[in-house]
Amino acid sequence: MKSFRFIDLFAGIGGFRKGFETVGGQCVFTSEWDKFSIDTYRSNNDCDDHVVVGDIQSVHADEIPEHDVLLAGFPCQPFSLAGVSKKNALNQYHGFNCATQGTLFFDIARILDVQRPKAFLLENVKNLVSHNQGKTFDVIRRTLEIELDYKINFRIIDAKGFVPQHRERIFIVGFRDSNGFTFDDFEIPHDSPQLKSILHPENGTEEAEEPFTYGWSARVADKYTLSDRLWQYLRDYAKKHRAKGNGFGYGLVGKYDVSRTLSARYFKDGSEILIKQKGKKNPRRLTPRECARLMGFDSSVERKFTIPVSDAQAYKQFGNAVVVPVVEAVARHMRPWIIDENTDYRPSSITNHRV
Image 1 (tube, helix red, strand yellow):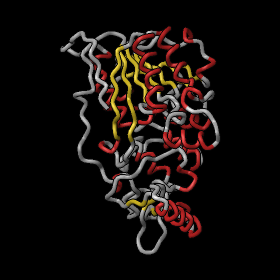
Image 2: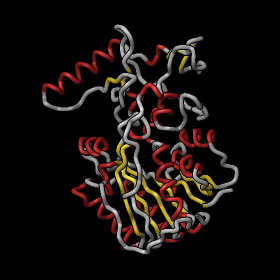
Image 3: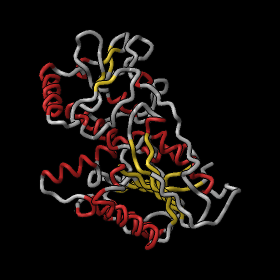
Image 4: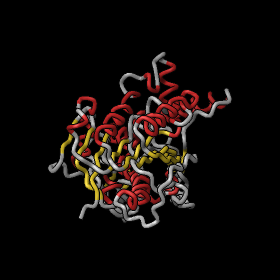
């Protein structure tokens, strides 16, 4: 039995939906503009019983079904460190001045204003807090707290307690009514999983899945191993920047390590997460299936997530996604207040802004 209804904005491939359905939520509306992400979303979710739309900017707020929770991982590129650097280099605007992406937060605000759901959960990059000397986040807080009268809490959560990936994201929770919700008692596992938990074992204990793995041992396809030319380029690039005192370079990791953050640009050269291989063999990229595991969409013992797109599109999609176990943990933390199960109800205006 579903216990509450939610809408999934900027849905990507469904990470928010997957996390909130696990705790009893029912998705009643989905919005995603990228056609390749929609293919993946539809391949993994039943969308026959609710509306799926493209650009949320074309949807009137009063046309959206009634819901208890609004979920939105609104586009982060205008606020991310890499996104800001790129736009500065191209003399382009970033943050709320980015006409195509930065203003999409205000589509969330207009829906909250009309629909007034009980709660919302927003997610973005860690840099959102410090972007433009903190002015961007001040606008977001004023909009949510003063103009819309929601009580918000936020916390920056590193996914490495849930998956073997260092990935810091800010999660902003808002409730329409004052209650005792806080992130103070939100628990994050102290010990990080190791990369071996998501890597193909290549020893025959896993069934082969072409085009990612082949043969009786399900070895990783050769196409994921870096060419000599690309591997040399990455080493030269890292050497050049080390000489300048910069931290740019590739991330070479083994099975007992935790990786860097998987990004949407991973398809270009795989430099942020390169897997060591035995002998003198060049390192390799993760396969899309390993990316699905790294983001928590499935695991090495339960392969259910369908990947219907090309490798390049899959890398973009997983790099832009939320880490599902983190979302599920936040959803479980929110659930008692969403469905009024919490017996320790303490009306309060105190919010937790710990980062």
